Amino acid sequence: MSSFTIAPVTGALGAEIDGLDLSQPLDTDTVAAMRAAFNENHVLFFRDQALSPREQIAFGRNFGELGSHPYVEANPDYPEILDVITEPADRINFGGGWHSDVTFLPEPDLGSILYAVDVPSVGGDTLFADQHAAYDALSDTMKELVDPLVAIHTANMQYGGKGYSQRSTAMVTRDEAGAAASEVEHPVVRTHPETGRKALFVNRAFTLGIKGMHSGESRALLEFLFAHAVKERFTCRFRWQPGSVAMWDNRSVQHYALHDYKGEWRRMRRITIKGNRPT
Ligand code: SIN
Image (cartoon, rainbow, N blue to C red; front, top):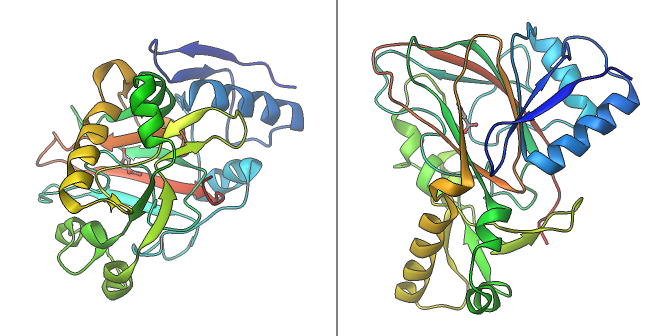
């Protein structure tokens, strides 16, 4: 087994892993130890990696089958890779708001692995928020209210005809009609399939409403949950360098790609690990 160190980056979530070369094959024990660190810290960071697209794909496959984005064009040579690019003139960026990835799908991704190719001279950090901590911090009365609720998620606000992501020039979207029509139900509180911990599972980008509530009730409750879920004390923030890697657990984390670097390029490569239906 390869030995590596795990250094938490905040009291909430996130850990930096040192001592591994992700371009090399990893043995079963090392992958199991990484999975344990992943489940405990929810987002893992690696520095100074040099990953070709093939090596990134091979690394990702240690953790499950890889997925692809239904509404954004993949890299033409590698269908598993989504090039997450912001051009200097772009007014918006991909992932520029708090969200969990693709919660508009019946089986949202288990997690994502993002590799930094080119980063701006300053800015372009990614923020992460621990949704277990957010759930745990609710009062018992609020937990009783939200525990049985079901939310409706859609891709429409992001990838429908008038969606936020239509305004990106660097990322090419597809199937606007499919995105506009997409609706799926998920529990507001999901149980992590590996740790058994409960996590809030609603996000501003994709959650449309709460099933069975009047729209005013649903809006008020979701507004509270969206704001509560990303309070500073549940978050960490990652400063990228070329060759940095972040691997996050989409079942327990929300993330936010900051766009505070107007006039510069940011080029990342993302792969995603397929997940199961949230319960
Ligand atoms: C994403 O939401 O997957 C993009 C994150 C980032 O570019 O930092």
